Image 1 (cartoon, rainbow, N blue to C red):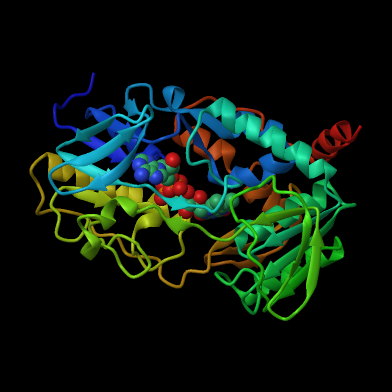
Image 2 (cartoon, helix red, strand yellow):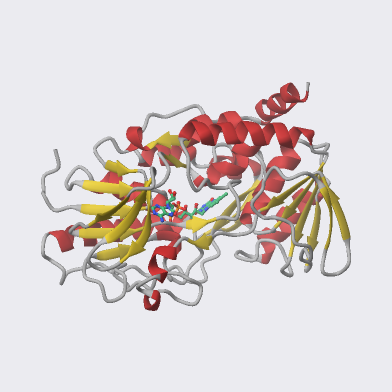
Length: 391
Ligand SMILES: Cc1cc2nc3c(=O)[nH]c(=O)nc-3n(C[C@H](O)[C@H](O)[C@H](O)COP(=O)(O)OP(=O)(O)OC[C@H]3O[C@@H](n4cnc5c(N)ncnc54)[C@H](O)[C@@H]3O)c2cc1C
């Protein structure tokens, strides 16, 4: 039983929303609105594409992670200061009001490769199995986007399926533009050694669908006239902020990129009891879980203060502007990390420990208080999965 009767509504149960719900729910009645019935460790998706069993540990039902939180399966569709309009799974519209509300609806991707917009835990696992079967039939894979997602997917594919022809197409002057050139150069070297073809400064000129992961293979051209054929085309372009609910009545609270304007206390600008966290904020820092965890701590303290009538003593969050910290995996055994105070780390075992072996699944299972799971899938494990399916 929560100690207080003051209520908190959280919209979006990803890294920010689920962690915050876990921290606040012992003391306050918390309602979580999310169209999914599960939390998926976002970093795990590239691995689950090549090893669907990996999703068993990486996808955690909200009922296990947040047993005392009231979960409404639905989507915030319009926000205003007095009430939030929610469309529930069955289409039914309802409004939700609370003493404090938190907007943490994260990023939207062009297709379900990295994130489902709806559905159940079982449907997500089925997606990975179906994708894996499709992947096995493909001899050549074209990855569009050379940011962290595209490069991690290329790393997984080239490790698990060394015989497939993998191409990465990046519109910018280099891959991994959000971190240091040294890290990018290392990643490109490793991929080149595995036969991955990386093309930069070119973009697709055709009008391929970005949303159908299972579309048939074909041929396409770039804006420089290069023809690329593929059996499977994967759009791995970055996410966009999920903030459509703000456009109806509060466009002035969005910046030009559609991100929500927050003040240093992480409250939505001009709002006393509405917070925004994670990828949807206009904080000038890379949109990363690494930074979100610092935001969650500040927001938790401030939410408690607001609920206890101490709004004059709020903590301030300092955005990690120009912080190149990043850990990029290149399959389960390799990676490259740009770490604070250390610099570039390319040593295999260090990258395996940091992320490549487990994709941070144990960390987030711990954060959400669910039991440990054996998620260390070694290279041989992945190869066996692929080989078994090939037969
Ligand atoms: C493949 C991949 C690898 C990554 N690797 C790293 C890494 O190694 N290190 C790192 O620091 N960061 C990494 N990131 C980035 C990190 O995952 C994000 O920065 C982080 O998840 C953002 O957290 P969030 O809570 O803002 O949003 P999310 O985690 O995206 O969660 C948003 C939630 O909101 C829900 N939602 C969406 N719309 C609505 C709505 N209208 N109403 C209600 N709910 C809604 C969604 O269903 C989802 O559950 C990676 C991301 C990806 C995709």
